[in-house]
Image 1 (cartoon, rainbow, N blue to C red):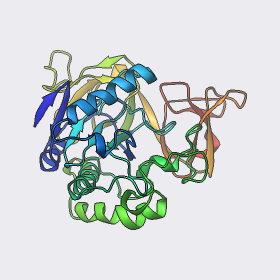
Image 2 (image 1 turned 90 degrees about the vertical axis):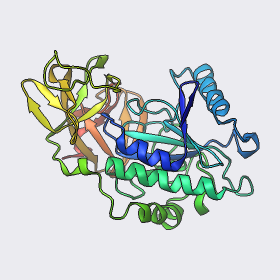
Image 3 (image 1 turned 90 degrees about the horizontal axis):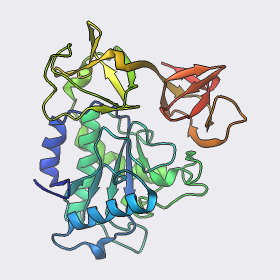
Image 4 (image 1 turned 30 degrees about the vertical axis):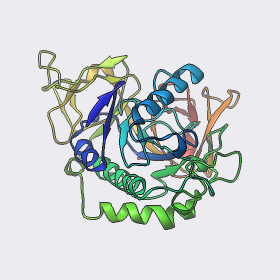
Length: 329
């Protein structure tokens, strides 16, 4: 593995080992698959992956005003992978569907008649999705592995590609960008790489979910403020939803397999819920008079941070939905 511009480059074998050992506090429920469209294969040379990644970051920061590159990972035609923004941070990729997601940008234009995916790239995309499913105990389904094409560009409503949508990840991405294409052509390949592999941490019982209410929150080796910070772990940030496996003396253990503790005083318990309506509007406040900012599809999972007059706040930002259209876990 090599590092440049703050990004780390690795091949898929290295990634599988790296991700299995990586400690991530943020709750991950979804994997987003994208293509960059531009840059495409024609811009990719033998050793310019870092320059392409840095170019995307510069564009995201200077044009969109984001604090960092939008995606967590980028994959390249030679099968290499570059890290992007921290996995502890929410991506900036699909309007209304970034919370609890990992965003993968597959460099290339995979619309029909454009780039022909290389065998190395294909292998990396499949194995990467499988490794992430294994790591975060994500079911291999079109509810959990999602394409940008399935979401309305303006509202974020899931319409499975029937309205104002990008073609992303491409009209020829593993045979197409529709839900049926994904289920027939991509998911079976991912599932074949996951079969029989279970993340040991998933066997531990999650007793609750909490969200971070301070700007940052240190992760320590034991349940007290004098304990050392966990080596190699950045603090978790405001709005992150974390799993709690154990409580002790006002502290929460947030790993099922390792000693990683946070001070409970800087968190708030949240409830996991599932959308039960065909489409659920998301508004900027707890009433119908507030502007619509996104929409959720049936079956989407959210975390309820607060409740007010029959409405539920589902983000550290002001995003609210009607409680009657949620099934609480």
